Image (cartoon, rainbow, N blue to C red; front, top):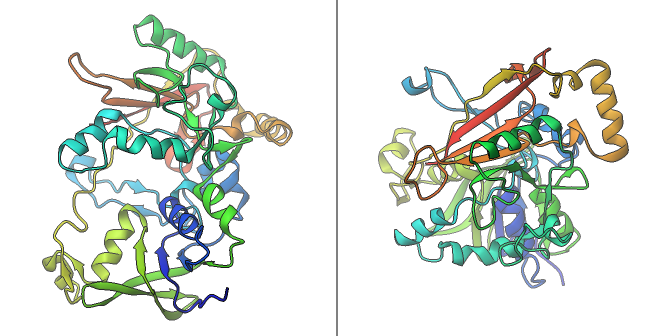
Length: 396
């Protein structure tokens, strides 16, 4: 079958976590011609695939849009970084790799507020369909086959290396009354345990690897990298194409059926507004004609800020001494031979989900815990002494 690359059936904007899934799933039908547009490039940089490489990719403008918040009184007039991936795989190529579904009550709450199809029972089949849970596949009884899947494309693995300092912390938490919890994505989120991560064989497993890569050989799927979308073209109230710039040249691609916008929490509303879709006051202020009034576009973004709390340890049982000099050299050799150790770790190694007070239906605090500490967190420079870091964030 011949495909017209100049007028595909579907144009998917953004090759990130959602876009990779959409392009792969739509192109399963050989009768559908799909074009995926991604502003970044291919994921060839080895730091993307080595898990600890996030320390560098998170601050690399070649792979991160480097967005920052506007200064606010509540943040001490600081600009807070909001990492967003600019590469095939999107933020799943540079993120912390922590696989956290969220609490069932959150989904049920959305459904109760009128969002049909979003209850936990509604979305659970899709979580299971997406997942290949290594722990369940390997016979771990702590993981429930009614909750986890083993036939999906997204590999979810346990952290590959255990550490004395973190095991001691789990023991201490248990003595304080907090449960051990190997599966915070299971029936209960409460407690402390090692994170589940989107890795396979000690390498990052992004949405690009899970979904897009197996589909790249399909003749009905075309992936265009370095394609910066500037707006969606409209025919009346219908999206019929996409304007984008690639290597300094403007292009207009027409869609036979649909334009699918999956450019992330920041750029999806931005592209809508640039296309004249959104709140008129905001759009007109920038000299853009309003094509469709939709007041919610670009509003109500919510995120949870992580504040790092660090402690100096009395014993040398942290990663700090392994992050430079001979210690780092040994870790590089270890990772090359076994895909374990420091370089295989996600951003947070240990999870803790707790309730800040009695009477709550579920945890409202999440801890990201690592047996390491930073002298300069912005530049990811480790302390010279042994340390440990708690990164609490408020869930609601």
